[in-house]
Structure formats: structure tokens, C-alpha cells
Image (cartoon, rainbow, N blue to C red; front, side, top):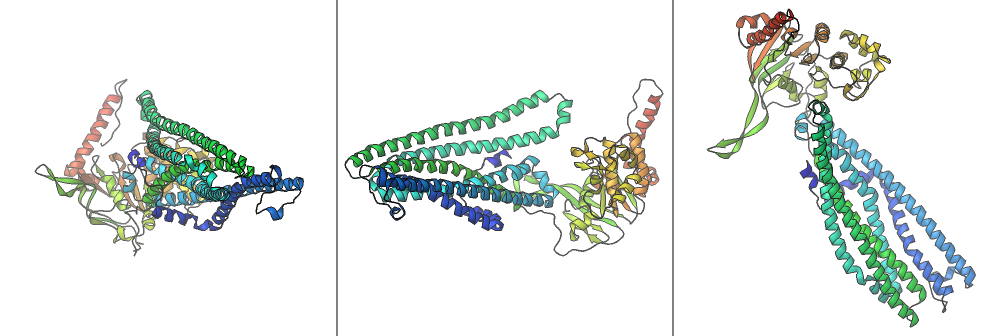
Length: 634
């Protein structure tokens, strides 16, 4: 992740800029007004010293009466004329304030609008991505795309482009006025310009390297925080706080050192430019003073040149800094557009088929692998790759209204079956069908709307309990929410809370116990009235009392629905219509509980292991002080 953040491309990429400009299209009027204000503000900045020159040459110098394009508007009377020039000067200042306020407000407003649009587009795109995309892209990287990278683009829109345009207009205006008034003094003013250009190049290269390291360090900090804050429980459980803190100090120090180098570059560059500009002003004063005394140049021109010389070098400083902003923004835009251009591998087909049947599920010779492995031959890597198969020729059928349980050792491929049924992944061979239609030919939303899923690790969002059960579905009424809670035996607990169903939950539902969160997940599945019910080890992390409540709720949940249950605890599935035994990616056995026990195969061994523990627990229960082991099939 950090390596990707280190890349900094060109400061200007026409392809990326054209694409970025499309985001400004809805705000063309605001941008046009801002650009007009920028040009007028630049004109006001250039006009100020010229007014000073006019006042001195026309009214204040020993040889008053100099000519200016403002003569027709100025009085020949010195006192009146000085008042007029002062009024013009004040008007220019006020107009400059209005123009700067206008362009700042409009560009900041536009930048926020563009950020809102871009972040909304990114989030909407992330929601469409398939699960395999999130397997390969860490959360820290995706958060950086939506936050830090979009901020870099906002800085370019609101500060970078605006300042560059204004600085260019100011430079061109000053250059034109200076050459018009005295080309000799103009050349004297520019005598230090080559040295400033060299210093700017060195500064830009140094700061560019620092910015690259800063971005990489920010990426490492984001990744580190996301991982260690999410894993705070095992971190504290194993007393790893000090070690984690030392690791964070190291990552944080890299960020600090990169910033210190950037600070050093700025601390050197700005005084160098200030010194060189002062030297240029001194040269103008020396040469211009001789010219004034010789009658070649007027005093007003000399004073105006000194002011113009001061203003001329400031935009150069700004341009060097804005160059780095542009470079970072181009790199950020490239990463953002790379994410937006990544198409999800799992999408609804162009021609969709609608399955409205009773919920018949069929796995037909399904082969599936999450990844490919390189093929080696005679110690050398061959060109091809082979699949690391998780499922191998899996075939079975679940009839409408039937309750089927799937058991097997860890890694046998049980949860993978659910991922394929919900089309989180696509099979490499074979087909998964619902009511005779391949899930790859169905609309994704329609497919998943038909299924209610309760996972082993329940996930609750910040918000009320009612919102977590409803999950924003318009067709789920408040009555349905409360009825579902009643059905799964959690309504009594919810109503005991101060605000009942409107009680607020913290992030991931941390205010509830694991069992309570699981029961809310059951209510969520039931409230959406799915045709197909999927339970993935939904009782594996709950206590015995909650398990009995869940088991009672299950009886009502599966009634009239096609149900697929994955469980380690065999006690929860003995009443299933059919039990499928998975072993090493294959279906090894299939039948009812009694049939599988009679076959004395894999299921029988699982059953013996579990109930052997229970028999041992019953014996130990008679001995005071002995702990009773929990019955688990794994």
C-alpha cells in the first residue's frame, strides 16, 4: 500500500485534467465568475504601483507634469489630483478585496461540491465491487482514496489552479507594464531571475521527494491504525500495548522526518528568494537613481519599479509551491480514477432471468477456487497456472421448503457454498441454480433479496435497534420489525431498554452481548421475509441459554422456507430434513441424522467426537471442581 502511495507522476497530465474538468461541468457558471474575478484581481494588483507612479510624476516630483493614460481623468490642480489618485488607489484596494472574496468563496464552494460528488461516486462504486476486490485491497488503502486523495484534489481546485492562474496573470501584467515604462530598468530587475529559477528547481525537487515520503508515511499510518484499532482486543489480551506503541512511534517518526525535510526546504528557499529579490531592488535603486539624476527616468517610474520588483518575485515563490500541489493532485487523481475504472467482476447480466419459484436450490457439479497457483515443472516455473480447488464436483439439491444442514471439518468448503449461492463469487465449473435458473443469469439485487442470511459474526451498524433490523428496506414496516423480534425471542430484552426499539447502538453494536447481537441478526433476517433462509454457524458463538432460545426460534424461522444451515453443533441440526457432509471440498455423505449414524462414516465420527466430550463432561460434572468441556464438532 505504501509503495503505491509513493508514486508521483507528472505535474500536468492532459488526460487526467480533461477527466477532472468534467466534475466542474455542473458548476460552469461559478467557475466562470471565479476566473473573471481572478483576472480582475490580477489587474487590480498591477494597477496599484502605476497609480503611485502617476501621483509622483504628475504632482510630487521636482519636474511634475509627467504623462499618463489617466491624465484625462485627473485635475491639473495638485491637491485635487492627489485626492483623485488616492481615491483611485482606495477603489482599487476595495475592488481587489471584492474580487478576491468572490473568487475564494466561489472556488471553495465549487471545491466542496466536487469533493461531495467525487466521494459519493467513490462510495457508490465501492458498494458495487465484488467481495474478491476487498480480499485484495486493504481497508486502509480504500479509506485513503476516499479521504486523503480527494482532499488533494480539492486543494488543487481551490488553491493550486486558482493561485497559478492569478500568479500567471500578475506576472504577465507586471512584465508588460515594466517593459512599457523602462526596458532598461526591467532588465536590471530580472538580473537575479536565472539564480531564482535554479533555486526553484532545487527546491521543487527536494520538496517533491519529501511529499512522496509524506504520502507513503500517511498510508502506513492509516494502515497501521486500521489494523491495530480493529484488533485492540487481542492486542490488550496479550499485553502487546508497548510493542504496538513502539511500532507506531517508528511509523509516526517516518512521517515526522519527511515533514522536517520539507520544512527545511521551505526555510531555505523563501529566504533565498527574498534575499535575491532585495538584491534586484537594490540594483533597480542604484541604476534607477542614476537615471533619475541624469534625467533619463522619472522618480515615479523608479518608485513604481521598486514596488513591481517586490511583487514580481512573490508569484514565482507561489508557483514553485503550487507545482508540488499539482503533482500530488495528479498522482491522487490517477489513483482515484484507477479505482473508479476497476469494474466489478460480479455484475447483473445484460439479459436477466427472474426466478419466482418456491425456492429450489441446485448445485450442479460445482468446482470453485479462490486463487490460481503457478505450475512448476522440473524446478522451473511453467507458463500456465492451476486452480487451488476449494470445491471439487459438488452436486446436491435442496427442495422447496426443505431444511438442509451442511457439516464438516474447518476448511471443507461449507461457507464457500453460501458465497456461491449469493454470488459473492462465481464458479469456475458447473452451475448454481435457484428454481432452475443459473444465479449468474439473475439480477443481483433480486437474488440477494430472496435470501435471508445470519452469519457467525453478526454485524450491527451505528443507529437504533429498529434501524438495524429494518436496514433501510422500505417494505419492512415497524410492525414487521417488532413481530420478527417476538418470533426470535428478543423483543422482551429490547423493550426492557430505556428507549426500546429506538435505543441507539454504538459502532458494531458493542453495547450488546454477542448473543443479543445474534438474536437481532435473526430478527433482521425474519423481518425481510426471505424465501430462502441461510444460517452460517449462527449459534457457534452464543451461550447455552441463548442457543436454546435460538433453537426455539429456528423452528418458526424455517417453517415454509427453503433453509440451508451450516453448523458445528450437531445438536442444532438433528431435525434437519437432510444433512450433507463435506470433506476436503467434496460431498462425502448425504441423508438424515439416523441414516448417517447408521452408515458409520464421516458424520458418525463427528458425532462420536462431540458426544464423547459430552459424556466426559457428564462424568466430570459429578466431581466437584472439575470444568465441563463445551461440545463442539470441530
